[in-house]
Image 1: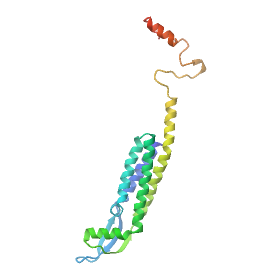
Image 2 (image 1 turned 45 degrees about the vertical axis):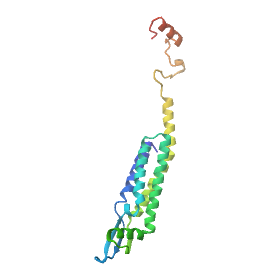
Image 3 (image 1 turned 180 degrees about the vertical axis):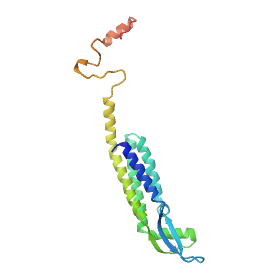
Length: 197
């Protein structure tokens, strides 16, 4: 995986993770003295606050992954993976216990904490898939940073320095042309005020 692909995959999966928190995850019914059968709708970011934090953490780490050195990129990949795990735990918590989320929402909006007919939509399951994608992308990127560094090192070693000519054949010797003066001769020529080139 190249750095570009790793960054794009991390950004896309983190954005998808944040997007699945917008729809309603949990719905229920509450009874109040003034209204019978009031609908209670709990969005993903309210039902699982850790989801939004994990998505933001993954986005920030993806930016570090784009510009950081080897150590920073490796740590950023690990942070992306950890954000995916955090989001997965948050989504799993909603699937395991949706009633407390619905009751808390009803208490905040209607002033009553008794709810019935609690239903969980498909979005927590989608969030689990997105969280797994974020975690896998982060782990993959963290492992791939070693190959990015090796490729960069080979490129730097193969690149000729300033003022040096490539030696393509044994006849080229140390890179000078056949009639080029040696360093000592060039220095002597400069001392005499002559141009050795």
